[in-house]
Length: 171
Image (cartoon, rainbow, N blue to C red; front, side, top):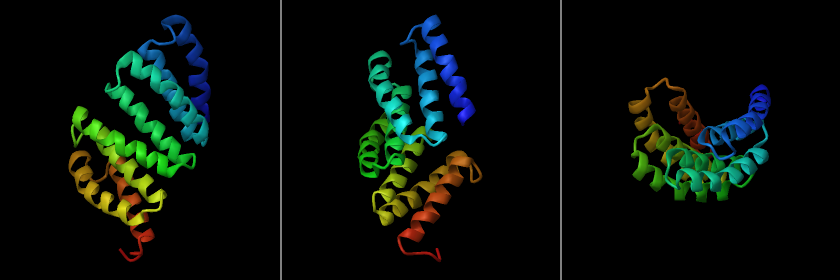
């Protein structure tokens, strides 16, 4: 991820100069840079970058544009990774019905928000709530994405973790 951070960081000023700082492609580069920062272990830096990007995407693309909703999802997730699980849970709880209305309840991005919400719920101390949400989500992801899709496997992993944390280590 560090190599991607460097590549996006090098690309960003070129895109800003050639396309403009608020061109949708420039905003995508900013989002990718923020995402890769998080993947490289800098959750706080990623959170700050997404927080800076969100109002620009809301103004340029609109508050319900799919890219804006993805920025909201990623901001919330990074907030949780940076240590504010309750804040992340609240933000994802607010985002989920919007993604369901705009994208549909079974759209892969909506399912990602559901997974992230369950994960953050567990991180915020509600292991049983996380387990219940993931138990409900898993068959949907299996049907929509397939049982061996990486996102389905992430949900299975999270379910196993929170099931154990909720007191059912045997499963």
